Image (tube, rainbow, N blue to C red; front, side):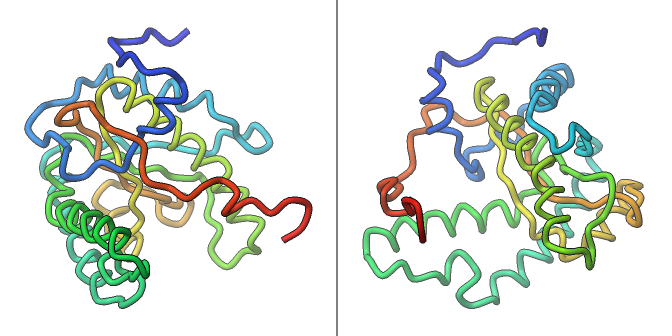
Length: 222
């Protein structure tokens, strides 16, 4: 059994509906205990895995110099991202002023993380043992079927303990550079995402504005 440190009083539905991508509300000054990280990872390992292969791996970065170096890579990649019209979060038009206002707030939050990623007390890089470069789509889908559930479970476990995370992939523009910083064997290990891990400033996260379920359900056919 995983020994649970102090957790927030959240029902399962509250946990699922309030686990947000946290950026501006990360406490960049408060250390995160190693045992707390280990506890979250232990829970993440309970996630489903294709063929029971457990191919996911987590690189947990605490060293200040390495965090700063990864943060600089992320900053450079984020700069490229901001120039991609229609892809960059701040360039997407939702066609509605209220939705666009929310989009601008999200963009401001993402911009903040673009500059401060390396200042998070912990960085977590989710990896897969084995690469899917040039392979059929089923290979990538199967790999993500191992890593993504584990990472989401990690985020849920973190949220329950007053910590925040945020799934990002922009550093993969320079994946090999980050592999060299951390000694990740690039030829045999594929990085999937990068997330800060920090205590949050307050724990009062609410459900996001989302469309009704029927807007995305296709009953029996597309």
